[in-house]
Image (cartoon, rainbow, N blue to C red; front, top):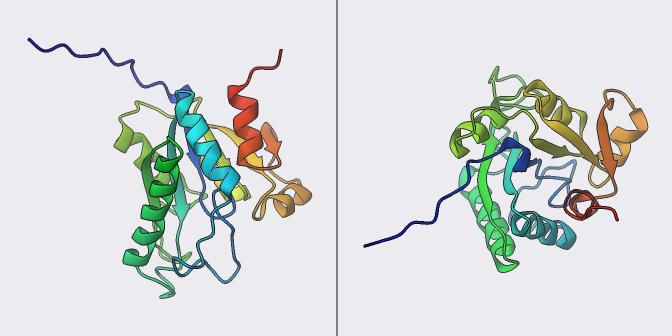
Length: 193
């Protein structure tokens, strides 16, 4: 006779969707084109693990137009994401889904942020009925707009392009602002006494 542990229904309020470049790893205006150029923020890797250990589901939604531009291919992107998964797993966490848009800005796709297609891919892949109340964390306005389009709560981090986005000030209503992913994670999982 086997017994199974009952699983709690997935709650969108326990889902954190992260942009990649500028949130998890260093960004570059010249694109992240190789595994050697993919340099994670150590505090972000730790933050992802802490989110998981606190009962949150973590996913990534990332525009990767460098594929459409011919700077790298999907095999190189897979190497970067394999390294990301390995680093997070070594800290005791897991990224449940990585959605990426390989298209360029003129490809008329429905997945390139600020459109919400990547977030809807995350929703379907993880079996959520909706994303209302989930978190979308990014360093650019388009990340936040994608989250807002599907009723996510939004947070801007100052890493990557985040400080420049904050300085512009446009479109940040109802968006929380943190120095980095680690600061957001601490705020989310460690209640103030």
